[in-house]
Image (cartoon, rainbow, N blue to C red; front, side, top):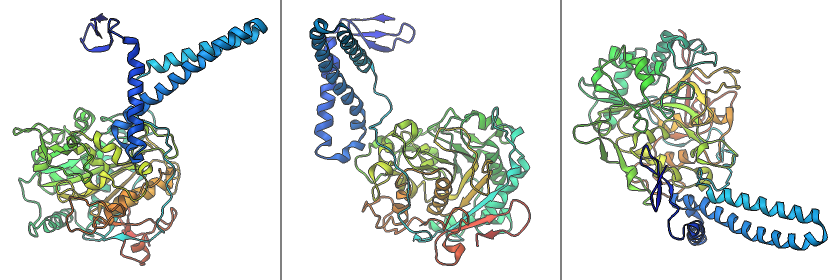
Length: 529
């Protein structure tokens, strides 16, 4: 370790790793920094408590708290030392205890003084979600060829992972059954009977909604597929299932006739995390672009818009290839993001769920500025949520042909291991499911109900869905800049109960969500009626 008058540097990397011993008044740096952090924190939050969610306040909070504890310890240790002098003459044992107490306080002070700010936390618990709207009370306007339909298929025989070793290996899946699952669930979304015709219907529906005429996919058009590699293609933690991605590629290339080079699989926040995916899919699809963000005209384009002016502009950039793509497929993973009723740190997440909406954090060059704006459990009900801007953006929403949710395995946290489900019909097994639909609000609502019934969610977990369903006049009164005159992004409601899993269209009582159960094998698909 080399040391200059002002800094300590690592001899190998040359990076600054600490302060030098020769800095003037070096020992005063901690109290000065602590006092400044405390003054800043108090001045900003006492006048406007909502500023607690600001990144600068959350960075200052642990430093300010450490300074307060340090100052309290200083006074406490002084009192204990003074007490020990008096007690020594009277009771040596008591004096010894007081002296030990002072030493303990000083040791604690030293620990606090040397601590670096840890995960953002203020000790607030996330609370537990309780739906404020009654079951089967839809809000918003259903979208899709089959309005409000969310198709669900489950086949436990498609996976046979025993919980040990690396899970994303071909030996843990029946690829033929996975292909069958995805084929059947895609066909069911527009209510079709043929895979090619069903994809045609989906593309025609998308082009018509964008004012591009009633036409299907045209060879040469580019399709970007947003996958979720939040855990860098982990072989231990929850992540996108490569074999299910392979099933999707087979449909696009072999059935629809898309050139491999016109397909981009991406997660812009995990550019080094596609190794497992490439190992599984590349032998069959070598020309597909796996997380290839580099672009001859510059990799990133400033094209996103957020409705809260406090969000830093660094969040506005997305991959140029994605912005230029003709179509998107949003292929998310079903998982909870934050643990309910836990003293919050950023290790336990920010949002309640992480499905198709939050999936687009991986469509940004920098998603960090958005984190304080997705904590509905903290900011309360009827508040702005940045996920709604991602769900409603001209590129990320308007170009999306289909929403898919990979629920073969799920996680109880954004970076957890694979979790077996207790509720019926899973009964202690992995979910082994896939969800699909055209209405993003509806598919997020169904995902939320499943996750909440199985493992619980933090407070206000559905606030962003209320905002999206009523985006023209949302509960927060936010003017969402991406939607203009649109009154709704889709339909939201909660099912009647976790056993029957019925929504208003299943019951014939309203124009909300339809949970459409697709059998894994031949047999009539049916609504949950």
